Length: 287
Image 1: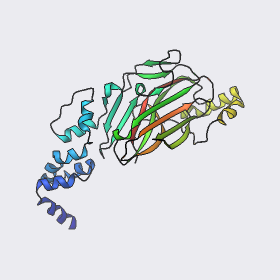
Image 2: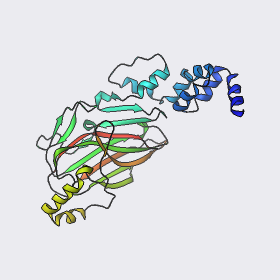
Image 3: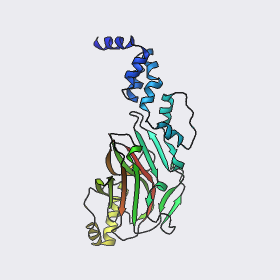
Image 4: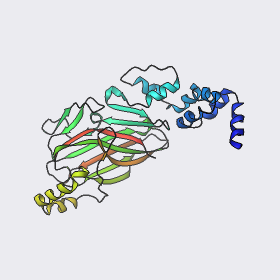
């Protein structure tokens, strides 16, 4: 009875008042409320509501898109932005989280600092149909692996916890990638907020490769690992888009504009490694 009375009381409010109230909820709640009544449906679809759910810089984001936008309402624009779109000349992708309206970005491999990535004996750039970007970085062979991404917190949703994820593939002919752990970290401003280790390996091949490397390298593996700071030794997990990802760390996007540095490094083993494909680094909200 109480729920019916509350619903009736809302129904006698002007549509503009209902729109204002819904604008202080979330995109998910607004969509659910549209099922309550015709007044709620009209209010939930209004530009007043969806203007508030859009990021404050949505006009700038739209202007940076690789494709022109056509929309008849702010709700339609919001839903368009929930699909990944290329911005900044195709060097980044952007999307909104449908349930909350929070921003996510992915920095393409071209937007990262990958040591010696323009030296053809070590890396080459290739086009893969399964990638959202026109190019990915493919490691041929080298002993020094250093991948760094940078983003400003002002590009992200304020007061939000984010995770940074290296998006990659490991080829069937990869070698040396998991001989010793890579060091991963996230820094905000001058502060290191996250530090850990990761193995660039496929989980299903872990046991076999560990046995082969132990026979081939012997005690050298333990000597190499002793040079690296201790960590949990994260391994890649599968994504819905067919790629793998490793969480580099997490950070909090506050009100101040600070630079976030996300990195993966393996520079202490001095052994050759190859068969790694880098699509980019994704920065998305954590729950």
